[in-house]
Image (cartoon, rainbow over all chains, first blue to last red; front, side, top):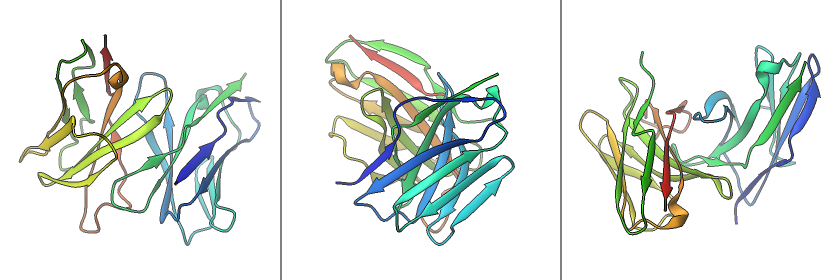
Length: 111
Length: 117
């Protein structure tokens, strides 16, 4: 069955460092991969979308890579700040707006 | 532009009851999707409506149903509630688009927290 896996353990890093979050998938050939941020008690907020024919996408301090051979996406936040603390979700879509989400990784950035 | 709004924000029901949740999308958005979020299963897709028609459906029992009105507002209904239906129900809207919305940015509402006792 299709599976999207993110590290369920929280990632703790120091302010100013680069945070790297991993998203692995199996039995799936997504056309698009998206990353969302979710704060407690709120709905997810869209961050970045990367297509299967793109290797890398950047937006300000965020960078996403998509390796269809390794079946993996990496999400980087450079110069991390305490305000970046949240749960980050990766999601994949190969049919319309039907997104399949990973379990999310909680990021804690300490000052 | 106002964001996606969901009502009510919190709801407590008992087993066997039914519940209706409401979602108002961003003005101009024609696609509305519903998701269930639980600690154990994470975020799971329920269904998507576009121009009053169900366009995609997730793997949930028939007790979960929805509809969309001509103004794109959507409602979701759960009948014969079970304890396991306790969850955060999220609605997301997007433009929709002629390609089935595959690259649409989805905007999520704050969710409705449903507790079934």
